Image (cartoon, rainbow, N blue to C red):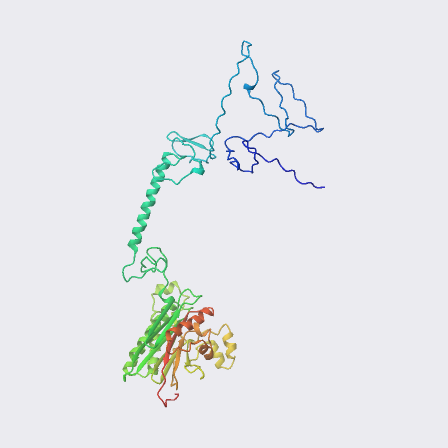
Length: 501
């Protein structure tokens, strides 16, 4: 049958006999320093197998020394008498005169255990190892180790107990170096403080941002300007966001207002989406949006018909993207597998009673009436594989857009495009509404016209910028897998009698 393990004897304090815990350095009852005086030996007499105590062996020197007695039955020997307590004689045989016992010495003050000393470097000059682990230097005299219970904060210039004079000097030098570093850091912060009107770091709010996009104070990389863009021009507003999955924003937009020769106001919105599989898609979308916007704002005041002006704007955007492909021969040799820069384009022009749209690619234009009791509509057709399958009656719209090839475009702007075929169309709505010009990063989360109208705020005609933010937020909440760009152009109520073109 198994037995419980025997419990070991509990050590006691040599001063007050109170039990001690393993690893104690001071007695918890009287505070006695256990490291200064060795613990009382716990010797016990050897017991024979039959339980009797063996007789002590005769002393080797013939002197009959007193035998330790077991006074309390605990197995421990009784205390041995000191030499002064036993009678003795001098060298002539006369009895020794009793002497008064010396007063007991006071217990030594508690001292901390010896501090570990790190071994010196083997090649350190002037240092030798007289004892293992104990370096001795002829020029250094170690002082008494400090009591950890009475240790105080070090004061500059005052040696700490237990340390050498050289250590104190080194600490003073370290403190001076730290002060110098702090002063240098303050000077650097002041030097990198941005001037009035300069761009301030978004991380530390104190440093100036250099031309490379990094803070000169903390080195934090700054968000790129195109990660999130907003613009409001008259009644037109646009918002573009990088999204949650892409490392950069490859969308771009251009909005503006002008007037026709008769003074009628006209609003313009262009949205371009860079083709990610091409080279420099962000540059392509930016160049195309700027070229198309400038072309429209320049042609409409001259009296060019809005639909013709839209066609010419798409052609101008195509030329701007094609120009990006005119790279040095060495650049083409280093990356022969890359396609030329490319992007899609969609735009809208709103004048009094007339709405003109134009596009190349799969970005879209939606019409959402102010009166939500009337149906919304999608005004563009995608240049994509899915649209071709639907147009050829080979697949339903749901099946086509569920296919992994759905977003493969069949038309784009770029030097390697098959053939430029700008699409334009004009409409004459008979009621007020809002024109939604967007990239696929938005309509992926509101594909049908009814879904787009559902997420559109009711006050979009009067608050286009707020509504554009809401639509971008809807795409981000849905996952933000692509760059998201949307421009909203309010369409005013036409004069009475206007019909649909």
